[in-house]
Length: 342
Image: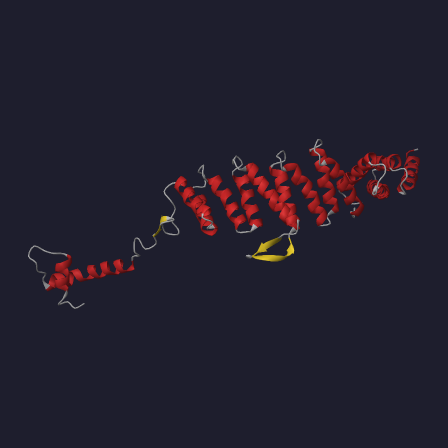
C-alpha cells in the first residue's frame, strides 16, 4: 500500500471530524495498522471449527469440552447411541480429562469399555472395564462389568485372538483368559460370576498346560465356595490336572499338596470309575514326590548341623509316607542321628 493511499484507508478506518488525514499522521499510524493487519490475518476464524447437522446440532472444536460433566456425558452418549463409537470414545475421554472427579466420571469410564467392545477390541475393553472397578469401586455398574468381563474371558478361553496394533494376532490369547478370570475372582469374589470365574481360571490354566496353577485354582473353588455346585467338577478337574502335571520336589509344595488332597477326595467319592486306577497311581507318585521334598529339607538341616530339625522331617516321612521309597532312607538317617545323641 502506498503512502498516498494510506490517508484514504485511515479515513475509512478511523473517520475524523474533519474527514481528512494528513500524510504525517499516516506515516505515524502505519506501523500500528501493519501490526493490526498481521494479527487479523493470523487469527483463525472464530466459528470455523463448529459444524451443525440436524442429527447432532452444533458440534464444537475437537479439543473443546462442554461446560458441565452432565452436558459432556449426554453429548458423548449421543454419539454412542448413533454407533459412532470412535467419536464417542473421544468424547468420553474428554470428560475424564476435564471432570475426572465428577459423579459422571464412572459412567464415562464404563462407556469407554463399551466402545472398545463394540469396536471388537475385547482385551482393551476388559482393561477399561477393570479400570472402572479399580478407580471407581462404588460404580453402580459392577455386576454388569463383571458379567461383561466374564464373557470376554470366555472368548479368549475358546481361542479368540487378541487384536494387536489394530489387527488380529495369529496365536489365540488364552493367557488373557487367565488374566481376566483372575481379575473377576479378585474384584468380585462373592458375586454371581466370582465362583464361575474361579473355575474358569482353572480351565484356562489347563488350556495353557499350567497344571500346577490349575490345581491351585480348582482347589480355591472348593475352599472358597464349599456349597457351590462346581465343587464336584473342580475335584474332577484337579484329578485330570494332577494326572498331567509335572510337579517337582522344589521349595513350594502347595500345588502338590492341593493335588494330593484333590486326588484323595476324588478317590473317597469315586471308588470305581474310568479314572480311579489312574488317580491311585498318580496319588502314589505325588506322595513319593512329597516324601522326597521332606527328605531334601531334612538333609539341608543336617548339613547345617541342626539334627533336631532334621529328625522332625525324617520322622514325618516315616509316619506319613511309610510306603514311599524315601521312608527306609529316612528311618536309616533317624537311627544315625539317634546314635549320636546317645
